[in-house]
Image (cartoon, rainbow, N blue to C red):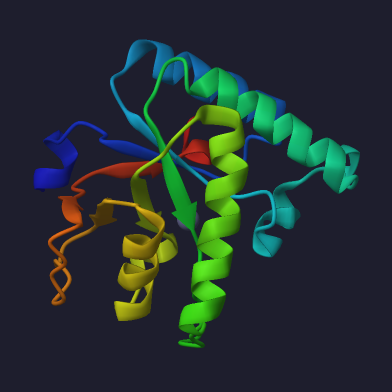
Amino acid sequence: MLQRFWPVEEIHVEAIANNHIFDKLLEYVQNHRVMCLVIGADEPWCEKRINANWLDIEKYRDDLSRKYSVLSNYAKIGLHVHLYHKYSLTKMSFKDQLEKIAETKRFVESACGRVVDFAPGWWNYDLDTLKACEVLGLTRFHCRTKLPVWWSPKIAYVHVHRWIHDFDLK
Ligand SMILES: [Zn+2]
């Protein structure tokens, strides 16, 4: 019940290849104080959201980059990276997690400048995720209800009560 009255704290941005969703999101961030946690250009699962015009990956990257840059004028930007498959517990190795998060960070920072916030996809993470964030200087780790058991003095845990996706803004 609490969630209903809690203001939206953050938006997980996954579908702004769709210009209509981007326009809605832009309007929202111009009128609300909210963070945007954005995906990298290489999230394979979100290709489903890319319409036929965005099959050119370079064009897609440029478009995403431009949109992230615009968003960063209105909202604080962080990273949203999916490290697990939603329906299985297949886990990525520390090295693979580190590489994927580092690549997303490089891409997002080239558009928005330095980022320190990280929210794991589907709120799924493990010790390796926390360690990778520590290595990469992602000092604000967003989690949903349970706080991680492993406590790093270099990481602040951000307890998120209410979040939405960009594609929920219809
Ligand atoms: Zn997500």
